[in-house]
Image (cartoon, rainbow over all chains, first blue to last red; front, side, top):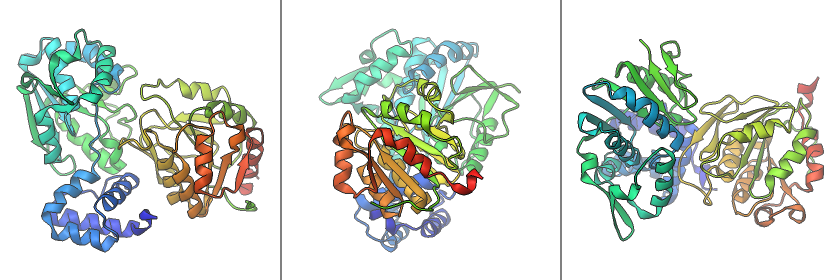
Length: 273
Length: 198
């Protein structure tokens, strides 16, 4: 079986070497997920032994970029968990509207579907022109896709349904141009977006925000790393700012539980002090 | 057929799709409360599913039931349900992990993913049961469990509402048991860890 070639100790060694040589630190990523991803790239790239994989990664810096892209999960959707977006629309945005200038950080944005989802909601709330969205990911290739704002048309039906459930009053299709099998979202939706690489593991806080969204990223991190990233978020969030996580994530593995208050049943917390 | 004898059970993995909920709801009330191992259930469900499944399961069992959250700890005599739209992995023998990577067999959660992960973490202490379903998911997962020395059980396709899944699995593995739903609870109870029950 293809997975037998990967031993835990060898993987640990590889990730230590990658961290040392390239500065990409995966040593505190959840092992179960990481192992699956490494097996997957070995199969795709027809690498039949650990030695082959290690040689390719350590001696071909070009390959490193592909390796990083494939071992991180970049699957994302527009308006995933529509109920969460409804909460954002109805409870969070009206609070953000009280600020003269709104700064939002979408951390681990992958190919950007959430960025466009949020940009559309800000437009509909008449907040877009005084908002700035920082969309970051550790992976330059997916950020390029996010910047393009071109998504497969076959997902649009699902996205439209989710958009409506989230409280959207228009047609999602009024925000993109359909062209054969792709949907290109309007450039206006990225005018107020800064796409930038940022590694949650190693990079520091770079601004203060009123809303930080980081959904389905922390599931790939061990508790210890989660703790560290929560501190980074806390340092990057204004008092009374909001932190939004994925539907199965929580702030349990942080020391923020006393200073943050959960909003209803969705995974949104407000910073109290 | 292989006997389980005095083997220890580390985890029971149950996978199912179309037609599997009824089987589960029939067998769960008859499970012992002190099995001594956790049960992880992966049932295909709609991406937008609500979390009602947890409370529905609770009505059918004396065991504690949780829908899995990130890094939830895995404890004996407890049922863990795969949440809609996430794969379930085992990080260690006592910790679960979630993953939102690509669908497998058009499914997330995928049974193969959890069975394979359970096989890697628990080896010969893993037990996997595959139920009714209209999908090829689970067959490869059972193969991993068997290769790791674990126990493989398949619902008798004759009794399955949709027999594609168990039939596909039988082409991939030679199961330790092919079993009717009516006999499942009894078999699971025999897997109970004796030391934990004293």
